[in-house]
Structure formats: structure tokens, C-alpha cells
Length: 380
Image (cartoon, rainbow, N blue to C red; front, side):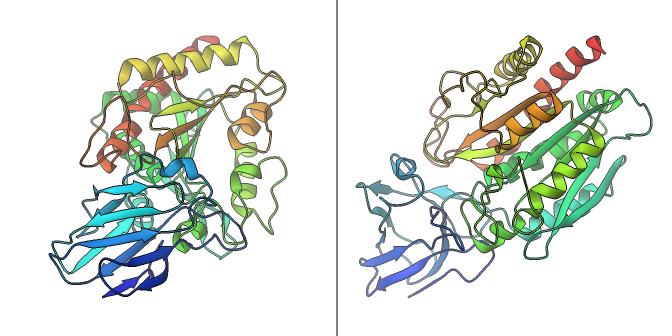
């Protein structure tokens, strides 16, 4: 029996593995950080034998509430991921499983590999009106890459729409979601996408944190920095990913912004707005409501009952991306959160919140984006 995590986004520490019914593991912290929650490992063992896998010391993890009602993900082929029987007692997560084959993979959520990310960039750039732009380098020396979809030079009245994903590397659902958005936007036979590109240019950063993604981090970059707390004063030394993106935003301007994330605890899709920024007004509130109502009409996967408490006027944390962008560019800016568990409104016991559902939500996001674009165009 072997347990290994020496691969892209791998993370686990073996405490003991004396027998299939007595496997004890721990999750490693992000480098130079106390955050831990993401796991991804491979079990090589005897098939058709029951295994009990215990991940311990979770009461001190980043989000202990995230383990309540959580079902771990497993795969044999690293393509189809399904939920397995999982229990949590407040400190230990117990996975009870009988592998059908010798090798089985486990993960906190469906991994989105660095190679797939590079393939997405390479494939997208071959599409009409799409350009792959390098903005800079990460701490580990990886590229900070952006896709520009649409022609920014054809019409100076075109709106500038920014989308970022994966500031927190363990939130891999953001990568699956942005992939769906990109694929629909590049579909030349999709009327909605063609109409959008007549009126707007999209600046999309599919992975804000490739270092953390490869390292198997939950929340931080290579040097333990939470990028979604760096948007007020980013630095080239510790948060170059944010520094380069924000610099480009200032060059292009921002008329609308979406930042894609995942929430460990809440089993819903929801948005967090910018009602606490100092310049929040009726115009911004109207654009937010237009987006929310359009998305509610577009898909039952989205809801607006459960979410984060709203900030009081003037009390927004301006180090957070959506707040910082809304404040600096006086635009509609939303953080979109997806579940690690499942959408409680439309539960799926076998797969939970899954890759196809992430991608479909990404495609559906173009509907409320168009609604906001239409509203903005009428006021230009």
C-alpha cells in the first residue's frame, strides 16, 4: 500500500498506514502560512478491500465548518470524480471506501491541472479575436497570463469587462467555471456571445495564482500571501500576480468585474457585492440588481437568499478584489462564490457540485453580463 502526493496540486502527509482499515493522514499547511484545507493524493493498494482513511487535526483547519456535511471526491481515471462516504466528528474526517481498482485518487475538490490551464490558454489564442497576453511573472517565475477576447481597437465605446479566477488556488471550481465562460464566449455560432463582443471586450485571467495551484495550497501564493487581501497595495516582491493585473486594469479601465471563487461552508452559488465601498450609489446598486435578477432567471443553480452578510456603508475591506475594483473604477464588481459541497437547492448525491455544473454556470454568466452591458450602453 502506498499513499503519494508528489504531483501537481498534491497535498497530504502520511501519519500512519499500517493496514487498509487504519490509515491516518494530515493536510500540509500552505508554504509560510497557517492555512490548510486542500488535499489531493493517490492511494495504490489492493482492490476490492475496504479502506478507512482518517484525515486528522481538522478542528484547526482554515474552515472547520467546511467539513460539516462534506463528502470527499474520488476518481480512478482522474477524469470522472464522484463523492464517497465521508463522516466528520469535529476534528477527524473519515472516508470509508472500497477501491474497485488498484489506484484511486482523492481530492478536496476536482483538481484543475496546470497543464490543462496551459492548454486552455494555447487553444483559446487560436480563436478569432482572442489574444494571449503575458502580464508578468509570479513569485515562482510562472507567467501571469490574460486572454483578451474581442477587438479593443474596433470601437472606442466598447465596454471593458474583467474576469479573474483562482485567487485562492484550492478553489478549483473557479477554473472549471471560467473555462465554460471562455468556451461559450469563443463560440462563433453563439448569438449571445457574438452580440456581447460587438459591444464589449473581455479581459480574462483564468488563474491568478498558478504557483499556489501547483504547490497544492488552499488560499495563498508561493510565499503564503492571500492575494485577495492585496488589492490596495500589491507589491512585486510578495504579490506580483495582483500588481500586474491591477496595473493592466488601470490601462484599460473597468466597466464590470467578476471574481470567481469557492466557499467551503455554504452549499450554494451566490454573489457578494460592493455595497460597503465609499462611492457605492444607486447606479451601482441598479447594475448589481440587474445582474442578480438576470442570473436568477437564467438558472436555478443560482440563488440570492444565502450568502455573506452585507457590509455597512463605507465599511468595505478595500484590500479585497471586488471592493477595490468597484471603488477605484466606480463599476459593478461582484465576487461569485460556488460550493465545495453541493448546491443544496439541486442536490446530486453521486457527484455534488461538479465539473459540468461549474462549466454550465460559466456559460450562463454571459446572460447577466449581457443584461448589464445593455443597461450600461443605454447610459453612455
